[in-house]
Image (cartoon, rainbow, N blue to C red):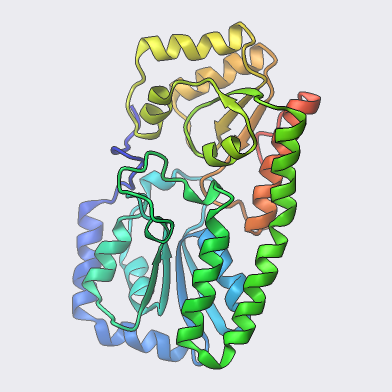
Length: 316
């Protein structure tokens, strides 16, 4: 069993986070000075590096952006908030966090360092999603980042009104740059309608649904793997039959997180010559921005469906 909590929520070491919050309470003046040192640039934080990337694209030369979770080779669900993370978040004038319990440590840090001028974009709330939202990987939905970019431009304009036109123009350019991804998704849906696929967990489900694929993996298995719970024998047997009976054309695999169960699925898919597409919870870097990352994921899906080509790792 993997160490995950219900709903794909982050596991935060209690002692580490407590130490971070104590440090905040003792050193608020030091944190405030960090913002001043950055001069005219707006200090911004993205809890996940895909959100930090969007802030950077909209804010350009007027922002200094830090990504809290940025390592695509580790499990983001095992992230531990450190005192240094708390310092960075406390000094930020603009923050983006995912919500849906995925990065709830951010709420604790922000509460420990209240700032009435800090702009916080909670993507879950921005999209009007309930706390019961089953899939927390919101950035894979084609509707998410246009809304985020618009909100970033608006908040940056409040913080730096003199540059509002610059931020609006960058947001418009960002929206235009997503057309290649949207077109690629539409092409998959057109060329491979209702393509049957299997997954380990619902990381890229929103994108896969937009592309018109038919995910045959039981939701209960996806949720169990996401939450670090041992799937039922019945679900495991059903998932295995998708490969042995060649019921699916592609296996979409969370490249960042694996255990004995998901590794056995990967081995069985390869044994039965089912092409594998690796997806990520954290944007691979260097070499990618949000748009090129999402496009690469769809291109990998196209290659799997059209040429039976596996893409397990994205290289920049």
